[in-house]
Every structure is written in structure tokens, then in C-alpha cells.
Length: 179
Image (tube, rainbow, N blue to C red; front, top):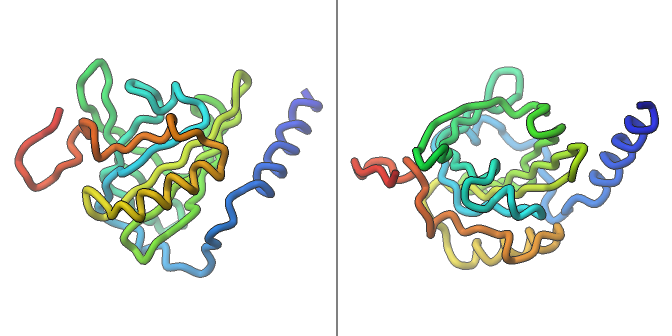
């Protein structure tokens, strides 16, 4: 057991050093994250997590900064073909393994890239999610995200453009559900 904990600690240290250092977030106003968001991309080095019905094929709806510097997320996902809602807070959790979460990029309050590293006993994996304030973004931003994901070791086939699929309740204000 001690060896397992030591290995997990070393993995976390190595993962921290291997992180994408393209953008360092320092002294940003976390309250600017609060509000409505749209899922644009999801990417993972473990394909089954982001494929249809994968546990990480989720769609952000709202993010709120809490007083304790945690973030509250409201998501939708498909369960048995039906769109359902769920929520969680951003602290590390034990769900499908041990998760470490961080915001790796925050672009002028219009988009964010969320990074999740999962350490489970079967196979650790990473997930990158790209959220924007609008239902879609420029091709240049999409290309930039693909490049970031590939630098993290994620193959192009595991980078899913969520603007081209059924995004549950993601299209707000139209009065039409895509479910």
C-alpha cells in the first residue's frame, strides 16, 4: 500500500511537470468564470471516455465561482439516449478513480480549457474540455485547441468537436431541445 501511494505521488509530480505550459494563469478574477458556457470540444487519451456514451462525454451548462474558490458546474449528459442534468464542484474527487482538475487556459472571459487527470487502478487518463460563451468559436480557436490536445499526447481521433453532434439542451433560447 505504501508503494502504491508513493507511486501515485510520483505520478502526480511527473504529471505536474509534464503539463502544458502554454499559458500560465496567475491572479485572474475567478468570478469572471461564472455564467453560461457551451461545450465546444472534448478530448482524451482514452477513447472510450469521450466516445458516444462515454463517461466524459458531457456538456457544460453553467459554471459559478463559489466563495471558497471552488467552482460549481452544471452539466448535461445522455443516459440511455435521454439527456439528463447533473452538477458537481471542482475539488478533486474519487469518481472513476482519483481526479485532479484545473483550468489550464482562460481566454479573455470568452473561452476556457479545463484539464482533468484521472488516476485509477486500471488505466490513468487525461481529458481536455474546451468551453466557450457562444455555441461555436472561430476555426482558428478550434485549431489551437487541437494543437494543445495533441501536445498533451491526445491523438486527433480522440478529439471530439461537440458543435457537430447532439449537445442535449445546449442550444438555449431557441425553445427547441436537441434531445
